[in-house]
Structures are given as C-alpha cells and as structure tokens.
Image 1 (cartoon, rainbow, N blue to C red):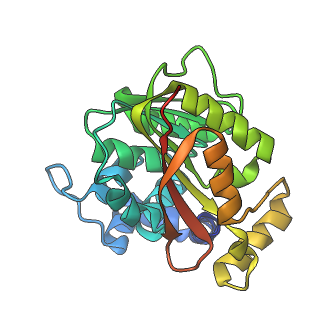
Image 2: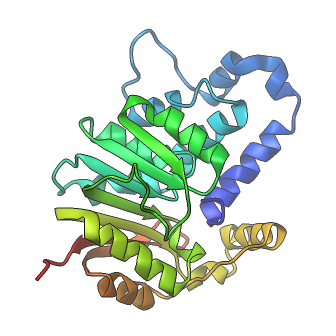
Length: 261
C-alpha cells in the first residue's frame, strides 16, 4: 500500500523518472537496457524478473513500480525464508493486494496455488487481476467487508501486507475473524505492518509523513505488543515475529490458527 515508507519512496522514484520526457523518447527497450534487465528467448530464471514480466504490457508507471518494488522492498527477500516451512498452499488470500506484486511473488513461489485479492482501488484491482492471469482474481472492496460471492471457501495463506494501519482496532478484529473462520487447519497468516518507530527521523519515515499530509486519510500505528494482542484475540497464535528491512519501521508477524473447540 502507498502509505508505507518503502512504497512511498518507490512511488516517488517512479514519479520522478516518469516526469522526464526521455522515458517516452527512448522507449521500453532502451529503458530495459539502461536498468540492466536482460531479455532472452527463454523464460527468465530469477523470480524477480518473472514477476516483473507479468507487468510488461501494462502502462509504464505500473510496470516501473513493479520493477522497482521487487528490487527495493525488503519484503521480497524476506518472504522465501518466512515461507520455507509451510505446506504448499492451494488458495492464497491477499487483503489490500494493491497491484498484486506480492501476490505474484507468491504465485512464483508456489506454482500450484491460486490467489484471491481484494483492494479498494479499481485501477489496482485491474492491474492485479491482469498480473495474476488464469491463476487468480482481484476484486474491488475494503476490509473488513471481505465476504463476496467470489470469496474463497477455504484459505491456506492469508496476507495483510502494509494494510492494518488503515484499519481501526474493531476493523482489524473483524477482518482477522473472517479470515480465521475460513482458514484451513495448518493455514498461515502473514502480516507486515508499520510500528510506531515509523514516526521517527529516518528518511523513509519523513517521506511517509509527507505523503500522509499530502494525501490525507486515517492511519493508526500500533506497538508490536498491541498487534500481537489483536492477532491473538482473533484466534491466532504468533509463530514468528521479526523486523522487516533495516529501518526499524516495519515488522512481520507469522501466525497460525488456534485449534477450534
């Protein structure tokens, strides 16, 4: 989501680059060469390139955002280690899927999985659906109102990445409860969230505060202890928690559903 510092920084980079007329003049091929992207006859071997290729026929701003995000956001270096011990999922839920970039990384990691994404933005939903292709679908909607006729009956992995700070405590509880109700035994909840340290003096934090003033909107940044309580109250046990990146502003929580009964 755009409100998190790393994504805000990536978007500023894309806006700055897009402001130069040379982007249109040199064309996509020369831009690929400038960025050091190697194109061959066969499929790219590195999963970051495979994710980027899902966006190559979209408008330049979306393609560039995806290209930079998978290389600059520490999420994409951390996800493989967070997921290494989980059974291959059949259905992935991505709440606040954005352009679907993280979802596409999951599809590359789990080639037998399908994905369902939900996001408030119609433009982002169209991009995500196109990027997911035949293996997924994105719909327009906003947490905690997740349940639609197309919503999957069973969820194996649920992702709330850089989303929870947009929700009130009540909305967080409702969202997690809906996920818990449809999560399979052995399912996994992945949450990445901004903690109060994001209000500190780092460059990323200053970029985020500038964007928040410019764009407006609700944001609630909670302590790690508070987030653990919200997750536990919804019926999950925290299996793992750790910082994301080096700025101390983002934090991972990996949780499993508590047995019913």
